[in-house]
Length: 438
Image (cartoon, rainbow, N blue to C red; front, side, top):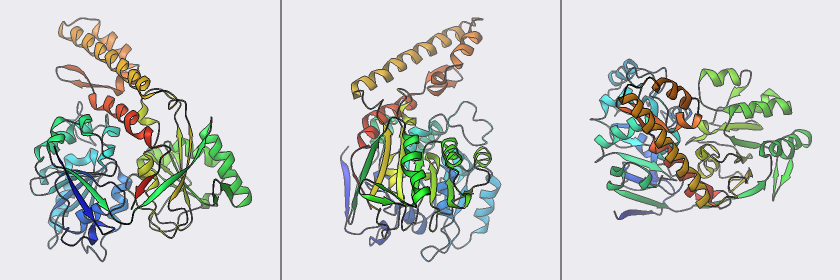
């Protein structure tokens, strides 16, 4: 299908005359922070925006009401139920429906979608959410979030909007996605963000010894061409972040955390504050991959630091945060580090060719297919070895990650393998290149 291209002389979508709603289709907005989500909230009619995580919902909802939209935006996630949604609908009178909902709670607002424009924001995270179960849905035992989301979106394929600055290649998604309008948007006033690369055998130790501890001791450290005295650290693990905080004996008032909002993380970060993203950040701010997607950060001094441990050969989607998404969170253009970030990584997996890495995935996929076929044969023949075989396979994290249980047996979770393929064919190519942000 031919790609429809938009060229805007304005910097943000909200500044474009007559641009009052997000168009339907599969949208590559090409840069982060261009304001499409703001248009969806502040303009147009009834809208449901589904996003990957609670932090993003809260970050956006907290910005309203404001001068641009003097209405209420409802955030829907764990702990918010159908009754709360219905109460919101009854409460608002003179404004359109504006709801932001996490992927795993979409079912709570499904009854409104006939009247609302469905927008799937940060859609590049869809494959990374494969395997997540629907939040609190009683009949969702065998349905993962992304399978359900695509089934719902297909019902509204004539009006649904997928939005991302780093969209997933459509050949890795259900076929119908490639058949809807394909859109690319180009914006004025972009800048190129370029990394200061630090290849180290132990990236987290390098972060500790070459950046955090020197700042603590001397108040600053020179990294590449920058003098660094304040950092926003993007990493995959709350445990890693807290281990680093404790080992460096950082003062609690100088530490902030942005991570998934759940009781497990509350326990891990106890004693430390979750960050208010609306203003200046603490000296050391740690953000996990479930926390940074789509949020807006405002700081006049801090430099972004992305830490990636790429030592594992498999489940490659877990190896790195999305560089463009992570490093585009800064919204304060007065920050002298606006166009730079530090990337600390070890290159063990990247040293293999794409062909070698793809072969790893394909071999694993064949093995998982054979396991599913064996289980299904045992199940259909009511073979007593089924339970013991399932138990043996179930001890493998790989089997649990890449399979789905359906009423008629076991199947390969193709989207999970496609997530790994996307990492190899797309994300790994970004790690030493610059890219545009708004």
